[in-house]
Length: 104
Image (tube, rainbow, N blue to C red; front, side):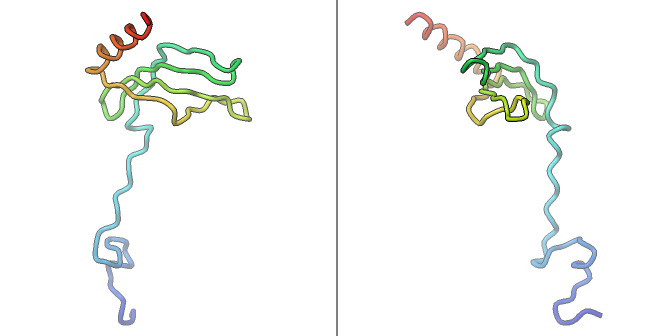
């Protein structure tokens, strides 16, 4: 039926060649990521970029995202890797630091 390396579990997808089950697929971001609520949009570089402040959730955990977005060649806004996420418990300290920076 199958030769020296044949094993029934290899044909039904239950295990890989090392005898381990295949990796579970990760849930899609659509099911784990809630809707973003945009709190602020600040135009940059003559409208070619935006700095966005958003309240989001991931796996039911809230956080704030401050990120640079750019306009693609197709005219769609896309996020860059340039940004930071802030946990709600860190928010007061971040606001205090930015208030201190404003006073300089």
